[in-house]
Image (cartoon, rainbow over all chains, first blue to last red; front, side, top):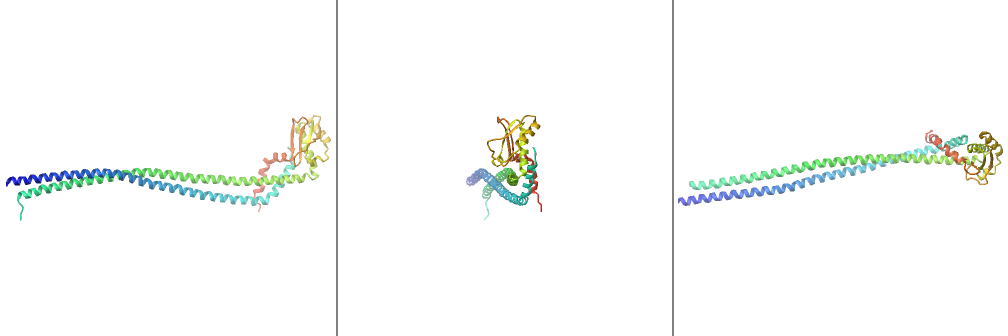
Length: 110
Length: 213
């Protein structure tokens, strides 16, 4: 009877040790998998943030190019207006300018 | 039915073992989560630091694109205005040439032509000189003897002015050359225009581009 009881207790202790060993094995597996997962998460997170930043940078440059083109067109349009004004003003004065230059040349002595 | 003492002991052994096993797994789960969180934070910090530099570089590039475009457009604008002014001023000189051509058909021009010949001959230093004229002026009767005397008086060199057999392609005025061709003075009206161009351009520009209304 006593032997039977002791055998049952030894079996229980053996089972307890096996359970603990299994738990340790699982724990190591969890940590190993977590380590691999962490590298993956690192790479994905890094790549995702950098991708977003590159997209934002591209947008900034793209917008700048569009803004630059708009500004350039405004300036050229302004230049065309200035040129037209010049032409109109000059057209009214061209006869007088030619007359003055003609008089100067005729009266000039080297 | 109540447990016997050894059954209670067995249950305790197994219960304790289960508790310890559960705690071990829970600890490792927490450690694993910690590793994940740490790596995530590390990746975020590194990527955000680099992204900040990337965005700053893009902003600098953007500023440079806009500034450069504005500067180039302003240069182009100034060039357009300057080019237009030059074109109009050139039109004035063409108009002046037209007026001079008409003027050479008047009597008033005779005096100017003689004066240009005399000045050219003096500048050439006197001597035996040939006067090149355009075909129209070639037919004019010019007081070359009197002009020769005047040049001689001015230079102290015996002077003889004669019409060159070859005519000159010019609106008017004269090209004075020594007989040996070593000395040449260009006193054509075109040359006169060119010599006055630098002084005349600003004056013409003022007249042309000042609003009068």
